[in-house]
Length: 154
Image (cartoon, rainbow, N blue to C red; front, side):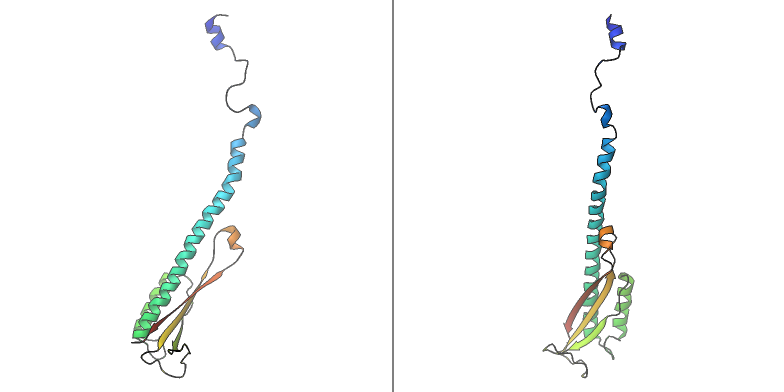
């Protein structure tokens, strides 16, 4: 055989790379790795969402306690300034539940019968639901994020 004929002839050995019986193995491996990877990715997204929700609820409690300590209103938390801050927090945090306002004296005992006096503390408790989107965490159901803050009345 001359050189041209040898180049045109089929090689007697299989081509380099994967043998014929391993075709599709890459797709199978990708499918097996893709599911845990997506679960981890959704878990990271849920962790970020949960941290945002917790931070938003804690900030709402701090802001409401600060405004209510300066503008208490009668009953506690009914001033126009507190209502305006509460409206902003309702727009920011989905599912925010109505906050609980209480007046606490220096010993930590709730002063329900007495009006809030200077030196007492305004305590605000805020909560909101959080629903994860990760399939495994979704089974746990809705979690309730709660935060409380207190500020001394000047």
